Amino acid sequence: MTVAEAIEPTTKYKRVLLKISGEALMGDQGYGLHPPTVQRIAEEVKSVHDLGVEICMVIGGGNIFRGLQGSAQGMERTTADYMGMLATVMNALAMQSALEQMGVFTRVISAIPMDQVCEPYIRRRAVRHLEKGRVCIFAAGTGNPYFTTDTAATLRANEMSCEAIFKGTKVDGVYDRDPMQHQDATRFDQVTYDEVLRRNLKVMDASAIALARDNNLPIIVFSLDEPGGFRGILAGQGTYTIVHG
Image (cartoon, rainbow, N blue to C red):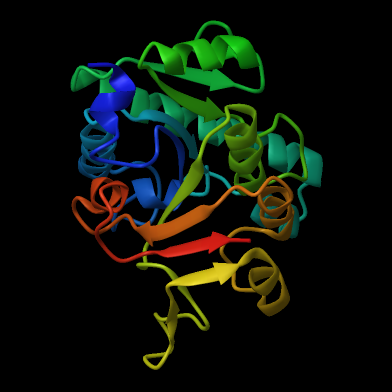
């Protein structure tokens, strides 16, 4: 039996990108890394990896430093954005450590070269890592200021020929209003890229949505706080919103 045949009955996706925010790693402590939370997310990733699915990851850096906030406080924007990129490398290394303790081989691949701690981004090498069953964690955004990790995730997903972006959040999909503030907020089962942009639904920033739309790359928004949610959606279960054309 080939790998493809082994995957087919379980999930229709063979290669995906998981995008999570840096805030997802800090648990309830408000700042930095919360090791039990990192461990829990790593277990979710491992459960999907065990299905034979090839996984890329992009993790934000907002739990350590956010470029926009630094800029708002008077810091020069380019410098602030580079600091935010370095924060994503720290998060990527933490996730790598958690995954490798579980026996999952990973590679941290940075858009900003720092050879002592991770690999530089070379597309063909990254694709080969995926083909060998390694989880690729892309760090340092696109390597350019003024671009968010949402845009970096969409860019890498397209470059790696991923079949979907899975965006793990604190809520179980896309709502017409913030469900944390409005009890009558309505969840969408599916929504188009254009409607996300027109209604400013805060799935990802506009550049990321436009890039996904132009390449017909679906975005699946689900709750990262629901145990087994990532694996469940790949098996056709659970609650989520799919953004597509």
